[in-house]
Image 1 (cartoon, one colour):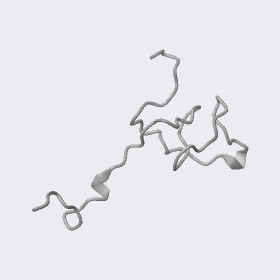
Image 2: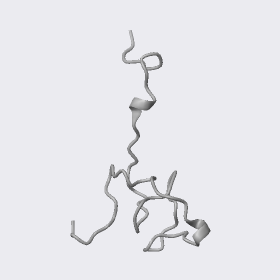
Image 3: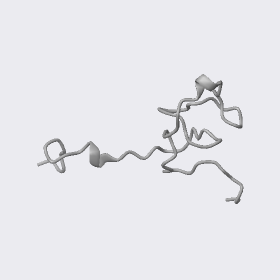
Length: 71
């Protein structure tokens, strides 16, 4: 990867963590790709449509709703 490559990498915390800037007229990234490409806007100059979003499952799974095995 080049030192000047600012594309987001898989698992980046910047994926879907940005602000909606359509009120400022920003609807595409620097390469012309539409924003957002998934659930939210990415932080940075590139919207990364192929990056996998990391979800914190600890906030979703609890001892009362998690099924760890089947009998």
